[in-house]
Length: 225
Length: 103
Image (cartoon, rainbow over all chains, first blue to last red; front, top):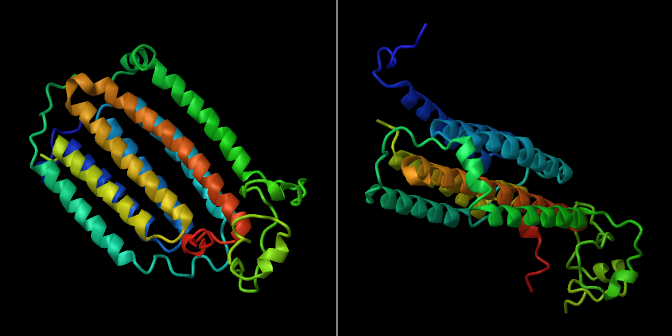
């Protein structure tokens, strides 16, 4: 049984209904990401927003981009961010202030940017869609990727390799290194000797105790006057 | 008719603006990173919309969106590694307490 061409009682086409539902899901999810108090919930709403965006890619006739969105954003980046959230959760985290004190300035800037962008979009004559044959076929995309964009493809692969190595290096916990050996080094993030932590969980970076904690180190932190 | 290039571009603008506000206003470093991801997704939506509505750009739009996704994945990896490394030293994910580089 085929669906009717338009939605009964409303007269909209199905595409319009799907567009509106996806738009509501995406913008609502994005707003919840930004204003949510609980950061884990923010991460989950981000997944919702990304999924709605994958639906938009299907509507726009780019199925390969939709598949990549599901694989990369929902499958990889969101999980990575959720792991990082769980690694950096502190007990005092969710109950404290969510926004900066100057958040109103950010809100004004965002509203100004939104009105400017909408004004630009509405006042420009964009080209109208020509025909229906504009879907990005996967075969054509693959042929273009390995002919005209092959240099960019290689550069992206090198970039991903560099990102993997950099991520492993930055997040690595250097237990075996004696912190005294690294004292002459530049102040990398690998110094695993964390500064002494006060009772309320805040680091005591600005106290002189820091100097005794990472002894002999000539880093910028301990050189403060 | 809701579906036109205008509608998609306005949608992308709103998503980008929400991401901008989140980046400027949130205190948590990971929330700022999530806002950056929202902004990158907004740009991707605009690129794919242009690709769908300008017939000569259909495949190029999809490809550029895929490249943006790869760069976003690299950026998320390195950004989260930096945040975890800083968290290990400072025991807080809140950016306004990372004040030791200020003076």
